[in-house]
Image 1: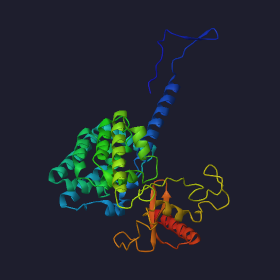
Image 2 (image 1 turned 135 degrees about the vertical axis):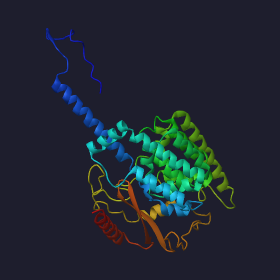
Image 3 (image 1 turned 180 degrees about the horizontal axis):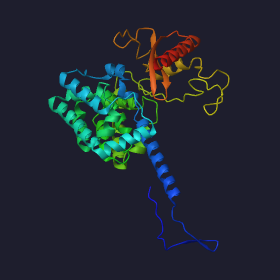
Image 4 (image 1 turned 90 degrees about the vertical axis):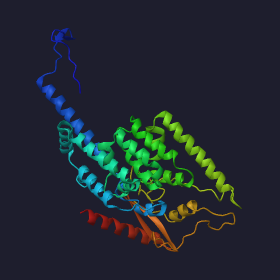
Length: 379
C-alpha cells in the first residue's frame, strides 16, 4: 500500500478550519498491520487454490484406461522425483497465515527461491535429456505436486520444456498439466503459461480431445473448461482453441455418422450436464442449496442414477446398447456392475463399483459408512 500525503505546508479546510490530514503514527501502524494482514490472507488463499486432487494420483484408474503408454520408473526418474519432492517440501502441512507469509518473504529476500528455481529446472532438463519418458514419469508419479511445482518454477525455461514434451504426452498427462497451469495466480496475464495449454489442445484430436475436455472438468470445482477458455485465456489464444475444438468436433461427428446404420439420434456421443442439489439428491429444504423438503438432506432421488446412465449410454439404431458392461478385471468393473462417483469434499471424489440392482436405501447406508471411514482415516 502506498500512502500519499500532502506537504506539511498544505492543509485541508473543514468547516472553515484548517485541519492537518497527515497520517499519525497510530494511523501508520494501523495501515501497516492492515497491509500485512491482507498480504497474509492473499498468500494463504494462493496456497489453497493450488490444492488439486488431479496431481495426487486421483486419476490413476483413468490413466490405466486412457493412457496409450505406461510410465515406467527408471533410476534417474525416481531420483529426480525424490529431489523435486524434497525441494517442494511436504504437501500435508498447510502453514498458517503469517507462517506462510514469513516463509515466502524469507525465501525471496535470502535468494532461496531463485536457487530452488534453478534446481527444479536442472532436474527437469536432466530428465528431458535422458529420455522424455522420465519427464512423463515425474509429471504422473503423484509424488510431485504439479500446481506447487509451477508456482515455484513456472518460468519460461520450464514452460519451453513442457512444450517440447507435448508430442510425447498422453491425454491424462495433458489434463494434469492443464489443471496445474490453470490454477496459477498469474495464469490470466502470463502468456508463457497459456501457450503450453493452447498447444496441448491443438495437438489433441478426435476422441482423445473429447476425453481431454472431460478430464479438465473432472474435479467439479470452478477451474473448469468453460472458465479456462472464456475467462482466463487471452483473446487471440481463445480463438485458436475454439476453432480447433469446433473443427475436431465436426470431424468426429462426421466420422461417427459415416458408420453403417448410424444416425444423429442414437450414434453420437453425448455429455450430460446436471445440477446436484434438488436434482441428483435432495437439499432437505436447507437454504441456499434448495427448497425440496420431501426427502432428507443428501438423499439420492429414486431412479435418478438409472436416468443418468440411460442418458449417457450410446445406442444403436435397433435400440440395443452400443456400449456394454464387460468383464474388466483391470479396472474393477464386472458384468452386471456399474461405477458410481461420490463427492467426499469440495475437491475430492471417490469411485465405487456397485451391483446394477443396488437399491437407494442400501446405497444411502453405503454412502454413510464410506463417509465415516473417510473421517476416521483423516483423524
